[in-house]
Amino acid sequence: MNIVLFGPPGVGKGTQGERLASATGASHLAMGDILRAAVRDETEAGLKARAYMEAGKLVPDEVVVAMIEDKIAGDALAGFLLDGFPRNVPQAEALEAMLARHDMAIERIIFMDAPEEALIERLSGRLICRACGFGFHRHYSPPREAGRCDRCGGELYQREDDREDVIANRLRVYKEQTQPLLAYYQDKPGFRRIDASGEMDAVYAALVKAVEE
Ligand code: AP5
Image 1 (cartoon, rainbow, N blue to C red):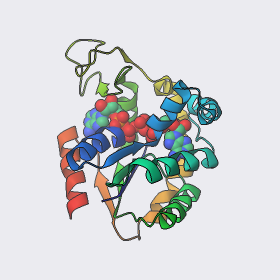
Image 2 (cartoon, rainbow, N blue to C red; image 1 turned 90 degrees about the horizontal axis):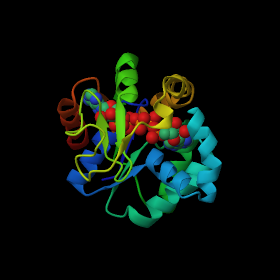
Image 3 (spheres, rainbow, N blue to C red; image 1 turned 60 degrees about the vertical axis):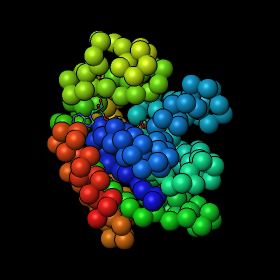
């Protein structure tokens, strides 16, 4: 099954998407992770993306569309879960055209939502492993040893764009550019909306139900 997960920054797309992908064997295509790897490796796309990401703005459509098409055409043949793409209506239109070219379709479009206070709390407490990328939260899913990843022992860090000023900008960009996707998708077949304000296992149960129903 091919799935699109979308929603505001910090709603839990990465956390839940990773869990669902490992349970189903689908490829988890997280646009933010793909971009951060390109920035780290200083690829041409990464060099173009860096300043936009640091400011909490969207990277230009032509950059992200080309990156995601490479992934979909390359390593997502057993099904994929798109997290963070599309993020505006032109990207959604580009996705439809790209899937038609590769003879693929989206079976579920899942919108995750939570109140803004919860999003800010989740983002400002997030910690990520520098070595394996696994995510933690200072209060909601703290590591066993402070500053160290439970999975691989790597160092935990706070993302540059999880600073208070950048979070505010990301939420503003979300409202202006990503929220219109809701009107674009909500009448399409396979659209589901889930309440992502609860604790992690409850949100995962709602996600699985939305996929299976
Ligand atoms: P990206 O990395 O995709 O950031 P985002 O969409 O802002 O989403 P986040 O990763 O911040 O949040 P999430 O929903 O995955 O939450 P998570 O599960 O980590 O993108 C970064 C940047 O890249 C963008 O700003 C933009 O510049 C660029 N970009 C990306 N895609 C693009 C595109 N398509 N076009 C153009 N530019 C693009 O959870 C957050 C925290 O909360 C974690 O600590 C987690 O442990 C905790 N948590 C999760 N669920 C719960 C829960 N239920 N209860 C309590 N805590 C929870």
